[in-house]
Every structure is written in C-alpha cells, then in structure tokens.
Image (tube, rainbow, N blue to C red; front, top):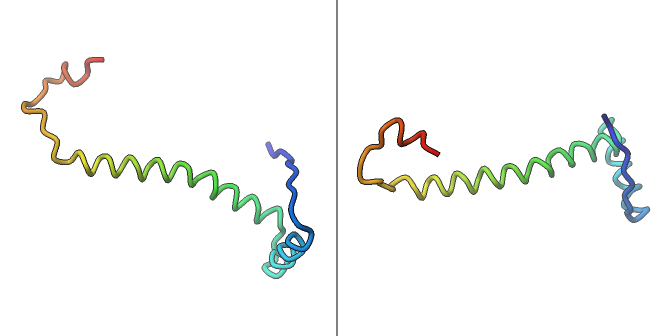
Length: 75
C-alpha cells in the first residue's frame, strides 16, 4: 500500500529536480521512491558492515576446547 507524505523544499529546487527527472523520462515521485528505498536500506547495510567487522575481529578467538552439540545449543 502506498502512502502519501508531504515534504517541504525550496520551489526552485523542486523545479530543477522535476526538470532533471523529466529529462530522463521519469517523475520526481518515482525518483524520490528510489531514493527512499536506498536511504532505508543504508541502515541495514551499516548494521551488516558492523557485524562483519566484529566477526573479523573474532576470527582468532579460541574457547580453549571444542564444545559438545548440547553445549552449543544450550540457552
């Protein structure tokens, strides 16, 4: 389901953005949706990047012994 939102921006900026979108056979609305998807996805990408950094740091961690299957599945 699509939902309408209201944004405020300088009139000249909006006009230039509409011209740019029109030059590429699209609309400002379509371009904004693309930007919003990318922006929202950036949050997840940052979390994935932090996770990978932590995992790289832990590559040399040694528990000192192997764990049994039951020990690994304990909560």
